[in-house]
Image (cartoon, rainbow over all chains, first blue to last red; front, side):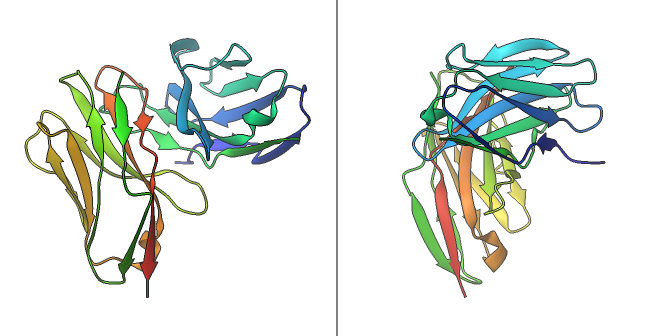
Length: 114
Length: 114
């Protein structure tokens, strides 16, 4: 089985722009979670989608949004980019998103905001 | 709110020796899972080992084992016969059984010296 894929792998944007990141889960997985990793804040949960519905949300401003499509692929969008949004964005997929089902992480998208 | 603390920002070990990474957590939940993830320079997050809180027996995966002390809310990782490929950032993580959100510690950077 192919693993979790994230595109693009690297991205450079300018402050004020918006960006969309994509995550394709492992085939058959219906849960996709997103995390932000920065040197200062560490790994923080953004949100989780299951069967096209946002099921859980972390403590991030409304500029961060996401969605999930019927094929379980997920996108996250960040509007009005700030310098502090520079981070590694990881997504993880799971069969059903319950704790006894392992989460598999993708390689991440490195976003740099200048 | 659940918190996870890793008090060792950096650790080093000689090849073939044993090293223990520490983790403490705080939660009011009774049903949860604990994890150790490895993040090598490639940034791909890899699950090393997991422990269900309801299980008294400590989890073991080949050279990796944990010491789970539920009353003390402690969850340490022991790596035996350390190998150069074990060098990575190690994250301790918590997840309530009914949820999908992972709460991560700050990480411990492990160096393996030849």
